[in-house]
Length: 383
Image (cartoon, rainbow, N blue to C red; front, side, top):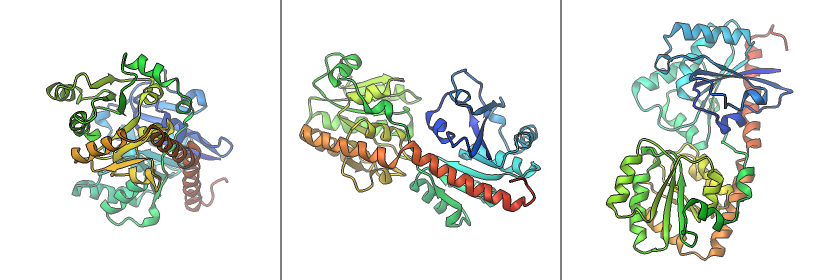
């Protein structure tokens, strides 16, 4: 049996994607998840699924490679749990994970799973990555776009060191929507007959809501029955609300705040929007596709590979409000039957190409290869 340790920078609440990533074949894999900082809130689904879950409780500002107490705790954990493979989730956990494996007697193989773009732009970061990646068996990009970014912006990486395991989800809650009119009435009263554009995500700079609002302001003059709903919360909310008010669109653009009923929100929409400036993959887009929605999304990161060759939406330049507005106008003018056909294609693409099962199989293959590397370096170890 292969023993896997996941190192995660901070516990931020139950995370369905991670829950699926660690849902490996229990006959072949044993998994331990370790949060370096953050506290147990009693809502994490992993323990109930049989995953050993640890919270080290370190100050997030002290998660540095020179924190000897942290390195010693991780070294001891790797030895006590007889870990064969360490998966350092994202950049922040990779330095301490790599150094701890160097200290551990059992010398686990290291993989690093990277979710975002643009983390190797400075000389200092490139130098640090050069040191870390020489001691890393595999670097996993969650999309081909992320993998290309890793290879293009780091020194001395061979193509076989970087592998892609595309994200995947379980879509059951998005496949059987409520009656659309009833959904709409429960979310925005008396708006059932409008054309609903919408987006879901944190209100942050990278999600590019400012350009989206500017594009909708242009659209609103030509499409008087269109509205825009924005689900999510974040640091840009006050600024975005002011932008809407200044544009005189308070009756056309609606902020829904943080929502736990995302399947219901998606079921209300006619078209889903994702105009991000950067996007490693776009889980919200996959959920919208599973909900049978046409998509307008940025031509960045992992989004083009989600589209593939299928015609279920439009990709746009996220820096062009005119291009985004034109795409919205095009889709709003399509017959209902055409929009439904695009939604069918989107759902088929999500279910067939971006399932949790395919993602899990990809991780299992990486771990098997990393375990073979560990056995090679430890020829006398029990098999």
